[in-house]
Image (tube, one colour):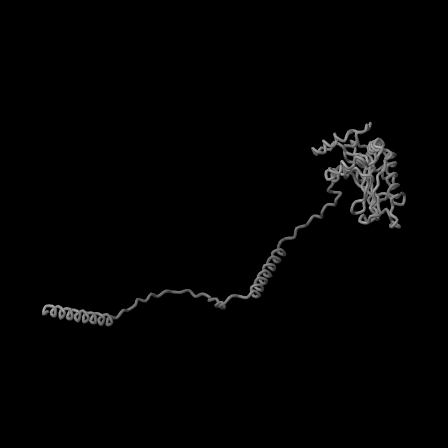
Length: 318
């Protein structure tokens, strides 16, 4: 028991000594003076930008700032352009000057703004073809009609007296014998259509065989090969229809702007044959004049070749 008391006394004494040493050390540290080192740095004089306002700029202020910058850029660009030396700009060449040499040579024969009668225009057309091949003589008639109106949608088929000058392949959709047809037979034509093959330029059929062609309407229609009573390709007299197609029966129809475009022969036909075909087309156009159109039915007529200059025809002489 006595020994335990001695140990407790020694422990208290050691604790007291430790506290005394700690207090003494803290006191000495506070008495020590710490002198900081000072470094002198030379700072160059600069303009201090004004401090930006705190917060986010509004959309309006941002837009105004962007417009101001764009305005300054436009002014700078305009100043640069005015300072540049002016360069002479060459005038654009006319349409005739951009043509080939052969075209310009034959175009000199046609007077600008001159109206020719039918004979003169067709004679001039045979002299102004710049191509080496036998070009087609084309007729373009501008009519004062509205194709959207049913009675003014001019359409007809005529037999050109001198023919078209083209070799036409005619197919007869019938099992009867047809002498001048290039292809005859329902089964033969149907097999070709199943394969997507169309070895003909005109297809003639009878009213009785037309239902069999209904299956191929989407195939024939867009190419203008579907037989139609208005074009004379649906008839009971197949032999006559084939003979007329071979002889030069053509179909014409106004386009969306009211103009009829039609080939009336070849340059090699000469003036006389071309005149016969020309008169036949004009007569057909006049016969199909709608009752709702009173005056100025034919607005203008032009004759040209495949790649030649156009020749204006006087309407009063028609």
